[in-house]
Amino acid sequence: MTAQPKASELSAFDPLAARAEFEILGREVYGKPLVYLDNAASAQKPRAVLDAMKIFAENEYANVHRGVHYLSAKATQRYEAARESVRRFLNAGSVEEVVFTKGGTEAINLVAQSFLAQRILPWDEIVLTTMEHHSNIVPWHFLRERQGAVLKWVDVDDDGALDVDAVDAAIGPRTKFVAVAHMSNVLGTVTPLKEIVRRAHAKGVPVLADGCQGAVHEFADVRDLDVDFYALTAHKLYGPTGIGALYGKRAHLKSMRPFNGGGEMIAEVTKDNVTYAEPPARFEAGTPPIIESVGFAAALDWLSAFERPAIAKHEHALLAHATSEIEMLNWARIIGKAPGKGAILSFEAEGMHAHDLATILDREGVAVRAGHHCAQPLMERFGVGSTTRASFALYNTHAEVETLIAALHKARKILG
Amino acid sequence: MDESLRDLYQEVILDHSKHPRHFGVLAAPTHKGEGHNPLCGDRVKIYLHVDGSDHIDDISFEGRGCAISQASASLMTDMLKGRTLEEADRLMGGFLHLVKGEDATSLEGEDRERLDVMAGVSEFPMRVKCATLAWHTMKSALEGGSTAKSE
Image 1 (cartoon, chains in turn red, orange):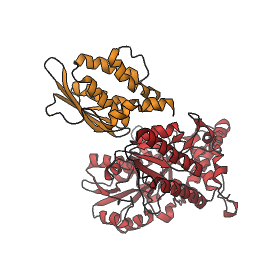
Image 2: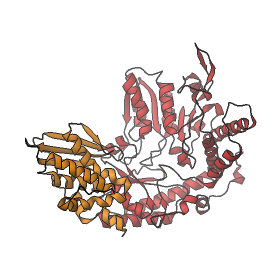
Image 3: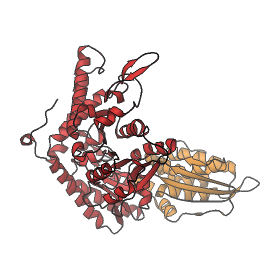
Image 4: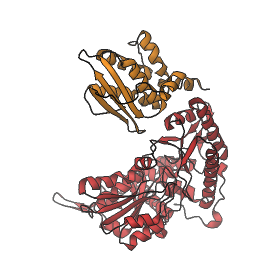
C-alpha cells in the first residue's frame, strides 16, 4: 500500500514526462501519430497501472475473502488496500463507505435500487438536470416506470451553466432525492455541487453525484462536499475497465438492502433464511474484479503523486487553446461555455455531421467522439442531434490541439 | 488526401447528401417505416406507395443524419422508384453485400454502377450502419414493422 505522499514528495507535473508513461500514445494510426482526444469516454493507462496488474497476477493472485491459503490472504490484502486507496482519493471517513462496483453505472443503479426504491412512493420526485449522462437518468426512469416516481428536470442555461437557485427551486416537499453530475461529460460544466448539497440537505433531501468525469478533473472530497453518494469509474481515471466505486455515507449504506445476491455478501444462509453482511461486503456479491482493483489503486496512487492543481492548470490551458481556435472558425459553434468548465469541448460544425467529421479526423490520427454522448435530453435542449467532442487528459499537448484544428480545416475542405 | 476518404466522400455522395432526392412526406403512402440508429441518434422515415401489381410507384424519405446515411437514403429512393418489390429485395441484398465488402455479383449493369459509389463504406466498418439504415427501414416498412434499427 502506498502511503499518502507528503506535499514535499509530490513531483512537479511535467506533461511530456507523464505522457511517456503511456505506451499507446506513441503509436500511429493510418500512418499518422495518434492524437487521442476521447478521454471523457475512456482514458489510456500508464505503465504503472498495467505493470501493477501484471505483477499482481503473476505473483499474488487468488480469490479474495475466501481461502485461508497464502495467496488468498495476499490477494485479500491487496483488494482491501485498493479500497483504502479509493477512500484516500475521495477523502472518505472510512473504507466501510467505499463499495467496489463494475463501474459508475452500477454504482448509480445500486443507489437507485437499494436506497431509493425502498423510500419512494408514487408522485415522489427525483430532481435531475438536463445534462445528465444516461447512466444518471435511466436508473431513475426505472423508479418512474415501476414505482410512479416523478422525474423533475432542472435545465441548464444557454452556456450550459447550472444555476443553484434553479436546483433549489426544484426541490419541493415531495422531492426525495437529487441526482446530479459533478461535471458534464458533454459540456464540461462543473456543477456547484457543494452548494447543491447544502441546499438539498436544508430540505432534508439526500444527493448523489455522478463523479465519472468530476473525479478525473475536479477534487472529489466527499467530506468537504458532504455529498451522500458519489459514483466513479476507474477507466476514465487512467485505470482499468470493469471496476468503479460507490462512496456512500455509512448510515445510508447500513440502511440499504442488498443489490445482487450471491457469495460474499451474506452473514449466514440456511434453507429458510438469509442474513446479510455489513457494508461494503453486502453490496459486493460474487467474485469482484480483483486484478482490476489493484490497477484502480495503482492509477489513483499514480495520479495522486502529481500536484493535481498543476494537472488542472495544464488541462485548462489545452481547453483554452482549443476553444480560442474553434471560436475563430465562423463555421463552428461550441456547445458548453459555462464559467470554470473543465477540459471537455463539444461543438457542431456547419454543414458537417459529427460522424462525417469524426471519420475524417480519424484518418488524420485524431480520435474524438461523435454522437449524442449518452446525453439525449441535453442534445434536445441544445437542438442538435449530435456533437463532436474533444476531451483532454493530462497527457495531451498543445501540438495535438494544433493537429485537431488542422484536421478540422481539412474536413471542411472535403465536406464543406 | 487519403484514398479511402476520397472514395467515401466522393462527389456523388456529397451531392446526394446536400441535395437529397425524394425528400419529404408522401401524401398517401401504402407503407411507412421509421428507422433509428441508437448509437448516433440518426433517424430516417421512409414512405412508399406500392400499386396493385407490386410496383413501388412512389417513395420518399425524411430524416437527419450524416452524409453517408442521407446519401444512401437519397440514392435508394432514386433507385427504387418504379421497381417491383422483388427487385427492391434483390437490390437490398446486393447493397448490403457491397457495403460490407462482400461479393455483390447479384448487382448488375447500371444498378451496380449506381450503387458502387457506396462501396467505399466497406473500408469504414464503423460507418456501415449509417449506409444501411435507410434500406433496413424500407424493408421493415414493407413488412409492416414499426421501427427498424440499423443492426
